Image (tube, rainbow, N blue to C red):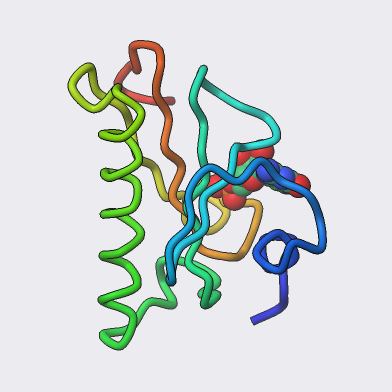
Length: 114
Ligand code: 5GP
């Protein structure tokens, strides 16, 4: 896959407000937040889209979700609730082709999202 700016953030070549890191996942605040809390969770090993995940990535995908859940609990908004979104390709609204999970919190979310 073509490298994206998220790989540069992972390597600390461009700045970001990093809020969570473990061996497999980095999380940083979205530059254009859509909620009071808007954090992007990215796997350190890049995968372009949800479509590109294989069985070999099952652990990585699971760790992405677990990292978001862990972060929500650590920040105290897990009980009130939050939303996790993964956009895929054009109709999903994906603009950066390095798989990432959006965690949105701090305000009520509406459904359908539009
Ligand atoms: P997507 O549309 O691909 O699901 O989400 C990409 C997200 O990356 C967008 O919400 C966008 O605001 C965010 N983003 C794009 N460029 C940067 C950047 O340079 N730094 C940070 N922190 N977020 C970015």
